[in-house]
View (spheres, rainbow, N blue to C red):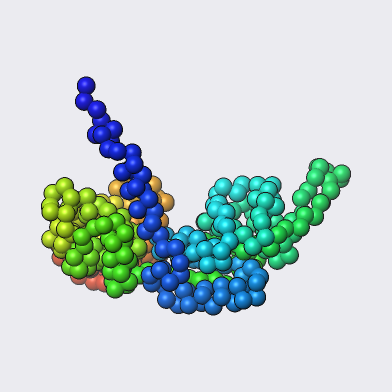
Length: 349
């Protein structure tokens, strides 16, 4: 009986590959590519804290997924020479869960809460006092006999990350001493990210190949690194191992990533909007049913990039395809501005 292919691979080789891919995260602020303004601001905050020998103010990092918020949280701990404790908002369901976590922190430790906007409200209210006064009140007992026991906390630094800053309550947002908003990357910064990752992974990446991958990465380093690994696989299996522009184009065609960075779901949404509903306007629920996905998936995964790329518009009447969307699909846009009363609607014959 033939052994599975993965059993033929040396486990040490697989472990080494995982270590290489984990090493793509920058370890120090000077290694972090892009986000120049946030890096400069953070450098000042951290250097000031080190000179005063005190933990820095609590840090809030906001911005779309994949831009390096988690990497920056780990860099903050590394720059401070402090350990980091990592958790997420959805994992903290009760105030007691947060109290147990906070009381276990050591002096100067960094607590990183990803998706902090999803933390439970009772836990969030407990966090207010912990952030300001480094103290929590633990309630013992129930009813009239309940007693609040104050517990002192070791000074710590909270780093919160969110891609939905608007969902943060005002009292929580105001307790962060530093807020950094991260923007999408431009092509030169993505090119630097890819060249650094290629060097760490041992990939022979040519400049034109890096430019091709960067142009399809949606301004997001996480996507750029993912595409680089898939192009590397293609180059090793179907080419000479060198990632050129031609190889990158062929590889990304195999993985259904087009020249704008649209994937299968993005094109399905555009295709349904244009071909089935005449360009809209159409409700997002109807659109989600048409592509066989959940409404949240369409709204949170596909729509943000389609809107940013100028291919889709959100209007009070529903989603509308822009002329650029028709052009991208190789079709002629109908007369009239997108979403106007003169344009096509779902109910036109």
